[in-house]
Image 1 (cartoon, rainbow, N blue to C red):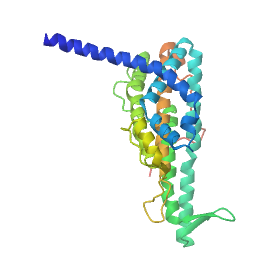
Image 2 (cartoon, helix red, strand yellow):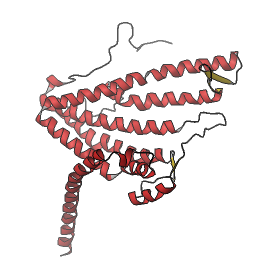
Image 3 (cartoon, helix red, strand yellow):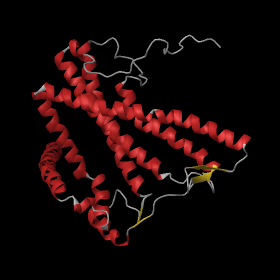
Image 4 (cartoon, rainbow, N blue to C red):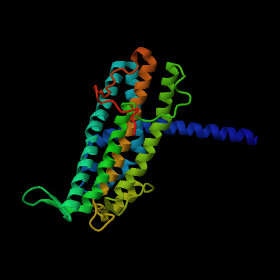
Length: 310
C-alpha cells in the first residue's frame, strides 16, 4: 500500500508539473501581449514602479516562459519551413559576426592606449591625460590605465558568440570525431539544449540582479516578489556605481556588469542558433554541412606561424 501511494504521489507530481508547464506556456501569450500593448508600465523609467517592474520581469519566471514559448513557436515554424529557419540562423549568425568583428578592434585600441600611457608617464612625466577641445575630457593616468580592463572585457563578452560561429573555441573531443555525421549533429543538438541554453539562463538570472544592485537603491533581490519590489519603489533612487579600486582609478565599473548581461544574452542566442543549425544539417544531410556559414578569410601571408622558432 505504501509503495502504491508513493507511486501515485510521484505520478501526481509529474502530472501537476506538466499541467503547470502547459498553463505557463499559454499564459506567456497573454503576458507578451500585455507587455507589448502597455510599454509605459515597464519602460517609463521616470516612474519608479516602472523601473521595478523592469527589474522584476527581467529575471522572472514570466520572462522565462515567454522566451521558451517564442523558441518553441519559431522552432515549430522552422521545422515546417526550412527556409524560414535558415533565414533565422543566417540573421543571428550575421548579428554575432558583426558585433564580434567590431568589438575585436577594442584589442587594438587597448594596445594603442597603453602605448600612449607609457609615453605620457615616462617621457612627458604628466599625471593626467586630456582628450578633446575647449573643455577636454581629462582623467588621471591611473584612470586610463584601469580603463584598459574595459577593452579586454569588451573583447571577451562581445566576441564569445562570434568565436563560436567561427569555430574558434577549444573542444575537448573524446567521442565526437569518430562519430557518424548525423550522430555528431544529434550530439550538437543535445549539447545546446542540455548544457548551453540552461547555463546561459542561469548566468542571466545571477547577472541581471547583480547589475541592478549596482544601479539603484534599495537593492533588489531575486528572492523578492513583484509586490515587495513595488513597495521598495517608493524609496527608489539611482545610485550608479562609480567607485574605483584606487582614488583616481577607473570609475565606471557598472559597465562591466552590463557587459556580463549582454554576454549572457549573446550566449543564449548562439545556443538557439546552434540548435537550429544542427537540426537543419541533421535533417538535410551532409550536403548542408556549413551551409551559409560566414567564416573569416585568411589572405595569403596572414597565416599564423605554427612552426615559428625562437
